[in-house]
Amino acid sequence: MGPRKIIIDCDPGQDDAVALFLALAAPDELDVLGITTVAGNVPLELTQRNARMMCDIAGRTDVPVYAGCKEPLVLNAITAEYIHGATGIDGVDVFEPETPLQDEHAVDFIIETLRAAEEGTVTLVPTGPMTNIAAAINRDPSVLDAVDRIVSMGGAMREGGNRSPSAEFNVLVDPHAAEIVYQCGKPVTAMGLDVTHQVLSTRERVGRIREVGNAVATATADMLSFFHRYDTKKYGSEGAPLHDPCTVAWLLCPGLFASKACNLSVETQSELTMGHTAVDFWHVTDRPHNVEWAYEVDADGFYELLVEKLAVFGD
Ligand code: RIB
Ligand code: CA
Image (cartoon, rainbow, N blue to C red):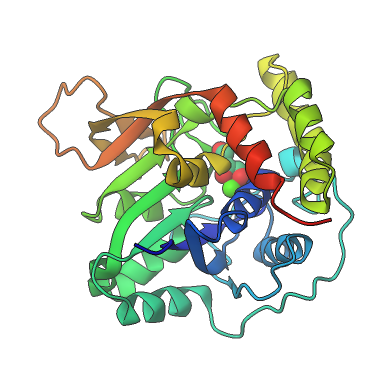
């Protein structure tokens, strides 16, 4: 069996950037068919540029990068420069990447790629607002036949919200898109704040990453040295949660995580709790179990995997 075919849909964002490095570090295990970008942490013109920068740093200017939706399906866009900085990837110096931006819209790429793929052969990995994927499903639901699983970063249960008292950022930006994706009928592995808040980029862990010494690891350490500032002040924790790489880490080493089949439904009506992910962890309803909700991770094992994979890149 060859490498798993994946499409990463992201909004870099320092943590998205690390997820891209992790995916590109494992070509024998993951075949990145394309990177699609969406407005999220920062506007689309920056998220697409940032994704292309990461491909340059990883020496993978061959990976096709696409720009997708500038706005959520229904709501007005919100962003997170207060966490990620004005560039979206503060911590590294911005440069004009060699990796080209593909002309095709990301949603068209997702649709065409899935239409051409055999049944159940492509994994979708959204690490930002799920607007692009929902737009593809809306335009042609049959594309889901080619999807074997969706491994998403988004939502929260025990941890509460990080952008509102009850909503996690990715889902809050586009709750209508998230609901379409979570209810699409394909297997979903959902990495929410409950598990991502267990993988904190502590000083010691960032130090181990920096000791790897190649350009990718140095860029990772530099970005994490900026990225932690907001969360450490907010939560009093030492280091920021490395949200998005949890998706790729699950693909590479699922045994690091514990999850439970649950119903997850998204609030799309209430102004107060818009974007809340109602996770029926204790099965108190008879709603269908539409996601595998991740609730525990071996954090040391996660960082050992990350350091191991970052070391594969040359100088
Ligand atoms: O809430 C965390 C998520 O929002 C991460 O994906 C981060 O990159 C931001 O997109
Ligand atoms: Ca993200």
